[in-house]
Every structure is written in structure tokens, then in C-alpha cells.
Length: 408
Ligand code: F6P
Image (cartoon, rainbow, N blue to C red; front, side):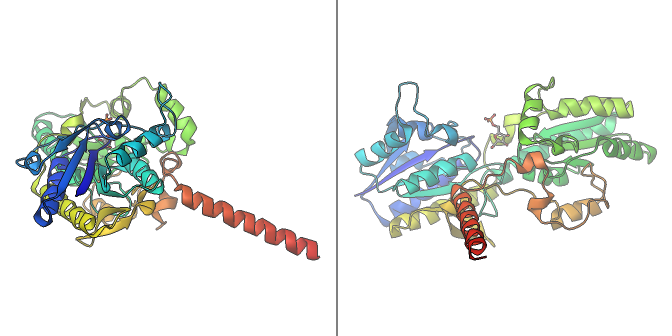
């Protein structure tokens, strides 16, 4: 008997169901002696042993259905080692559920936070395979995550709709696109929707540049301007703050989000009327686009192959259009940012899209990591293992220096 546990964790997105369907179809095409345990609401279900036994029939007819048939929740990684209100050790509880049900493996669908916990469970000795879910497309080790293309589709549609009304009025329109830490969705939707200004966390903006672009368009006879702005867009002043200072600023901000602050600044600097649109969670809702259906089915089927071969401890990712197995320890704790020097950004600039920065001044090609603003970069975490390695190197160096000093 093959016993598989499955859970979806973190913010939902399109194609979660399609991915699970891919796993189950793949497994049942090779074996019949399979039991599927679906944990409810992500890691919560694993911690509190809340599951339902599913058959292959439960996965029929869900290819196009948004959301997740298992439910999901956010269970922050940093709280995993903190006992719950009744003193329950969550990690031990998850291991207990796994062993109690004699599971052969866990299939975990999730984004960044989910992968940190998945890797921890691997380190604790559980067999884990993960699938790359997030609209943000910010998972390390894979070119693509499912949900991304669908979210881009929704955000683009919003910009398209704004376009027709924008042309009728001499206004500035700001569309807030999801992505607190990275700007992949905003960048793609901004280009696809023909936004004039695209603001992403990886490229801090200068309000004077934004005002100049808007006035420049007016002077050229273009009465409206469209801005696609990521939730995590950051001004060049704020980008200089430490992570702590920036967090404090956000906590005390009088605006619900960055676009409201920006709207006020734009109105002041240009005297133009500004309107804000926040598509919010519509970007994660509805049916997956065909790309996501295909991609999620592929990673699901690949996971099935891995389970049948007993290959655990990996995320299924995509490299050069092929599904690949990426070791979990390489994925956990890292983010895939937009490289401010990538060709997509350069091409967008060539088409006249402004990123709200002064072009030419900071154009020196620098590695993506060095180019990231301080406050954004501070969110990129170094995996514990790498931290350990760095410490080890430091100790070795100090020992060597001491030896040399003693010799002298
Ligand atoms: O990580 C996916 C995501 O949709 C982000 O783009 C967004 O910033 C965040 O989740 C919203 O989270 P929540 O659904 O918890 O409000």
C-alpha cells in the first residue's frame, strides 16, 4: 500500500487543484493500492491531524476549478517551533500525524514560507515533495510557479479596462498589483497592459521622475497616464531605511497601502486628478489560464513519477521548459527577485516604460543582489545551512590568524 499525504499551504492561487489532480492521476495510472490523505487548511491539518481520505474520484472535474479543495491557511514558519496556546509542539505533532498514518510521503503545495517548513520536515526525517505554487513567481530554483500566469492575466485585464476609461478622462490611474516583496506580476501585467509607469520593489522610484513622466506625456498631447504599482513598491528614500525602520514606517503609515500615498504625491506634484484601482484578491481567483493548467499538471505528474521512484526531498521546478527536481535545501529561505538589469526591464525601458527611476545614472550593470534596495534586500533570507557555513569559515579564519600570530 502506498500512503500519500497532501496539503496546500499559504495564500491560494489558481491551478492548485489542477496540480493535485496531476499527482493523483499520475499515481493511479501506475498503481491501484494507493491511499490519499488530504490535510485540511495546510499545515494546520497536519498539526491537528485533521484530514479526509480521498479517492481518485475526488480529483475528477477539478482541472479548471480555482481555490483548493483542501483549504489552506498561513502558518508562519517562525511560529512552527513555538508551542500553540495549549503547549502543543507543532513540529512533533506533524511528525506524529505522519507516522500514525504510516505515510510514505507528503506532497506539499506552497510558496516561500511553505518551503521553509517543508524543508524543516525533510530535515526531521519525513519524505517530502513540494510543488511550486504562488502568483508571485518568486520561488528560488524554478523559472515558473503555477498561479503566476493566471494572476498576470487578471491584472492585465484590469489595466486593459482602465485604459478605455483613462482615454476618456484626463486623469492619472494607479493600479495596485499584488506582490509585497517582488515585482514579477506587476512587471508582466504592466508591459502586457501597456502601462506607462511600472513600479516594483526591486527598483526604488523617485516621485520627481514620476511627475516628469506624467507632465511629459501631457506636453506630448497624451492626457492620461497609467501606473502599474506593486504592493511592495518603494521610494528611493524608503529604500535607504533599514528593514526595522521601514517596518516601523509601514506600521505608522496613514494610508492603507503605497498607492494611496503615491496618489497624494502625484496629485500634489502634477495638479492632476488621480484614481486608484486595487484588484486585490481577484488576481488569485477564478479559473487557471491554460498555461497554468498545463504547467501544474506537468509538475503534478512529475511528482507522481518521483513518488513511484521513491525520490524525496525535492521541489519540482522548471528549467529551460523542462520539469526538474530541485533539492529543498536549495529552495528554502530564498526569494527570486526581478533582476533590475535583466533584458525584460531593458526592453521595457526601450519601449518608453518608466520604472520611476533616473535612467542612465544607476545603469551600471551590477549583480541583482547588489542592485536591490536595502529595505527589500533585508527580506531575502540566507538559509540556515549557509549561515552555518559562513560562521564555520569565520571561525576557521580566526583560528588560522591566531596560529600565524602565535608563530610570530
Ligand atoms: O503571496 C501571494 C500573495 O497574493 C501576495 O502577492 C500578496 O501580497 C499576498 O499574498 C496577500 O496575502 P493575503 O491573502 O494573506 O492577504
